[in-house]
Amino acid sequence: MSLASVDILILAGGLGTRMKSATPKVLHDILGHPILWYVVEALKSIDGRPIVVTPAENEAFRSEFGDQVRYVVQPEQHGSGHAVRCGMEAVSAEYVLVCNGDDPLPSADDYREFLEESLTRGADAAVLAASLTSPGQLGRVLRNPDGTLSRIVEARDARPEELEVHEINTGIYLFRATDLRGWVARMEPENTQREYYITDCLAMAAQDGKTVYCHTAHGRWEMAGINERGELASAAAILQQRKLDSLYRDGVTVDMPATVRIDWDVVVGRDTEIRQGSCLRGGTVVGSSCIIGPHTTLVNANVGDGATILASHVEGAVINSNSVVGPFSYLRPGTVAGDHSKIGAFCEVKASLLGAGSKIPHLSYIGDASIGENVNIGAGTITCNYDGFSHEKHRTVIEKDVFIGANNNLVAPVTIHEGAYTATGSTITHDVPPKALAIARAVQVDKEGWVRRKKSGQ
Image (cartoon, rainbow, N blue to C red; front, side):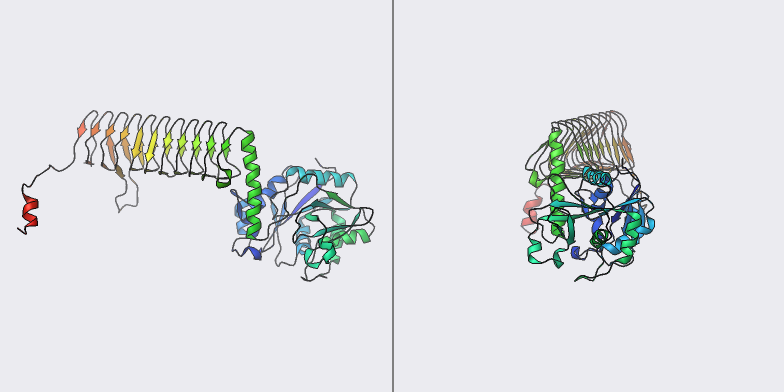
C-alpha cells in the first residue's frame, strides 16, 4: 500500500521499571493480549514483517509471537535512540517506520495515514504529533512561527512555558533509512537522563537541510504509551470501551458495563444480554439471544443460541443451544452440554458429555462421564472417577433415558444401560442392565428404645 519500501521497527526493549514487575512491560495483558500484540496487529496492513527490539532475555517474546516478527536484542537500555541504533541492523528497506511497543491504542488507519502523508510529501524524516488535554510527562512538539517543526523536548527537560504546549509526540516516526543510520551514529546523550533520544535525529535532519514533516493526527488521541500500572488500567479502559461499542453496534445488550470485562477476541451474537459483574475471556464465543450473568465468568467457552448461564464459572466447555447452567456451578474443560440440557445449582462438571435434554439439576459432581439423552441425575450424585492409585481417571457411561436417584455414588468404570433406574442412596459398583432397577444400600434396621436407653446411660 505504500509509495516506497518500508520496514517497521517496534521499540520494545525497555525494562519498564515503573511497572515494578518481572514481566516485560509490553507483555502485560490487556483484554486477553499483551500490549505489544495490539501494535503488531495494527501494523499488519503495512507490507513487511515487523522488527521488534527486545531486551536480552526475550524468550517470552518468542513464545508469544513466534515467527510473526523478527527480533533484535537491545543488550542494555540507554533510551529510544539506542534501541533504534540496535534495530537498524535488521532494516533493509528504503524507509523505516519507528513506533513504540508500549502503545496499544493507535489504529491501522492512524499508521497508514501518517505513512502515506509523509511519503507523499517526500519527507526524509517525519513525526506524528497529536493534541492532548492533559499531556502529563509526554514529550512536547515545539513549532516555528510558520508552523514547521522546531524540535521535540522531553517533559523532564522542558522549560515551564514549553510544558504549557498541548501538542505531544506520539513516538511514531518515519525516516529514510540511509540518513537515519548516520544520525543515530552521531547521537550524544546530552540530557538529564544521559540517554540517547530518537528525537535528536529530527533535529539533525533539520540541521542537514533534509525535509522534516510533522503530521498531526486527526480525531481524538487519548494517550501515548504505558509506563506504570495506572496507565495500563487507563489503556485497558479505552480498549474495553472500543470493544463494547463494537458489541452495541452488533445488537448486544450489556447491563452495567462498568462492572463487565469482555476480552478483545470474544464474539457475541445479537440480542444476547450480558449482565452485571460478568467476565468473558479468551476466545469465548456466545451465540444469539443468550443471557449471560449476572456474575458469570466464561473462559474460552462456546455457548450456543438461546442459552442461559447464571452466576457460574465456565472454562473450556461447550454449552449448546437453549441450555441452562447455574446458578453457582463450575464447568471445567472438556465439558459438552447438549441442546436443551440443564446443569443447575451448585454442580461441578469436568470432561463430560451431557446429552440433549438431560439434566443435572443440583448439588452434583460429574467427572469423566458420558451421559446420553433425556437422563436425570438426582441431587447429590457423584461419579467416583479416581481410584487413588493408578493416576488415571475412569469413565462413567450413562445411556439414554436413565434415571439416577438422589445421593448416588457411581464408582467408575461403570455403565448404566439404557432406560435403567438407580435407587436413592445407592453406591453403584457394577454395570446396571437396561431397564433394570439397581439398589445398592444397606437394609434399614430400627433399634426400638435405643434413644431412651442411651440417654439413661444404659
